[in-house]
Amino acid sequence: MKILHVISSIDPGGGGPIEGVRQLRAPLRERGVQVHVCCGDAPGAAYVRDSELEVIALGPSSLKYGFNRRMVAWLRAHAEDYDAVVVEGMWQFHALAVCLALRGKRVPYFVFTHGMLDPWFRQHYPLKHLKKSLYWLLGDYWVLRGARGVLFTCSEERLRASGAFWPYRCHEVVATYGTAQPPQDAARLRAAFFAAFPAARGKRNVLFLGRIHEKKGCDLLVDAFAGAAGQYSTPHPALHLVMAGPADPALRAALAQRIDARGLAAHVTWTGMLAGDLKWGAFHAAEVFCLPSHQENFGVAVAEALGCGVPVLISDKVNIWREIVEDGAGLAAPDTARGTAGSLQQWLRMDGAAQARMRAAARQCFARRYRADQAAQRLLDIIGPHVGAPAGADAAQPVRHAPAG
Image (cartoon, rainbow, N blue to C red; front, top):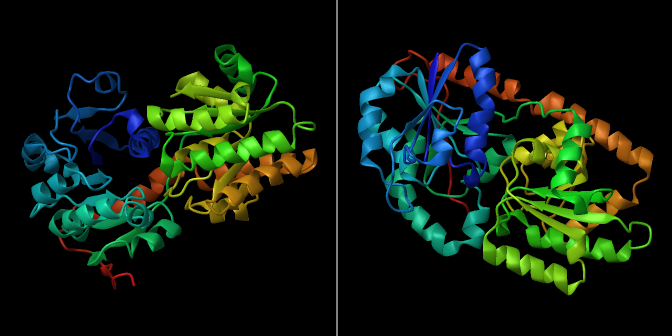
C-alpha cells in the first residue's frame, strides 16, 4: 500500500501534525506501507533537506493561507499513484487542493482535523471565526463532505467538533494517535540535559514542553508554580520550572516579567525548542509534566511524558484527559488559575508511595493506549476497506448536526 500525506508545512516548529506523521512512518513501514509527504514548503528549506521523510516539496506557497497552484497540478497528475491520501489539518490551501484535485478520481482521501474544529477557537477568536466561517462555506465544508472519513483522535474531540460550524456533514471516524516508545536510558539522557541546563540539576523539576502559546495556558502554569514555590518554600526548596519550546518573544517576555515580579527567576529555566537527547533528557529529568491547555485535541508531549513514566497534570480541555484519569496516570482540572494550582499542589502533597504508583500507571497507560504502532494499525483498518472501492462506496452514513445553539 502507498499512502500520501498532504500537509501545509513540515516545519517542526509548527506544532503536532507533522510530528504525528513522523511517528506513524516507522510502524507503517513495518506493515509494508510506503509513505510520502506532499507539502507547500520550499524545496531548499533546511527542515525539508534534513527530513527523514520522503518529501515532495512544492513551494514556496503564498499568503498565510498557503496558496499553491503547483500542488493542485501535482496532485491531479500523481494522486492515483497512491492507494489513499491523508490530509493533515484544515484551514489552509492544501486541504482544498486535495478536494479539487481528487474530484472524480478513484483514490480516496481522509482528513485528520487535529483539533482544528474545536469550539474554543470560536469563543476566543470571534473575528477569526467569522473569517473561517466564510472559508468553511466556500471550502472546508466541501473538503470534509467529500472525504471518505474525517478522523478524530478521540471521542471527546469528535463530540466537540460537531457544533463548531454549520452546516456540518461528514463521515466521522474516531481513530487514535500515538508516538514511538521513548528512549529509556534515563541516566544518560538526564546527564545530557543537566550538562546543557545545569540550573535544573538536583531539583524537583516541573516540566512544560511544547509551543509557548496563549492557548497552552502557560500563564496559568507560571502563576501556579509561583504560588507553590512560595507556599512550599520550606518543604520544597528545590522546586524548579522548566519551560521548553519555541516561544513568541512578546509572550515569553510577559511570562518572564510575572516570574521576576515574584523573585523566582533563578527557579525557572527557559530552554527554547529541544530535540533528540535534550528533549528526552528533559522528560526523564522531570518529576511531573504540566499542560494546562485551553484546547488540545491530543497532545503528543502528554503521551511522550507517559512513555517516560512521568505523571501528567493537564486541563480538562486536553481531550484525552478522561482516559488518563481513569488509568491513574495523572490529574486533570479546569483550565483556570485555581484548577492549575490545585493540580500542582495536589501532586506536591502526595507521599512518595502515591507518586510512585502514578509513575507506574503512566507507563502502563502509554503502553495500553498511545503507542504509535497501535495508531498505525487503526489508520490502516480505517483506510483498508476504501482502497480500490469506487467513489461514494461507503457503508457509513454521513453525520448531520444542527447548528449549535
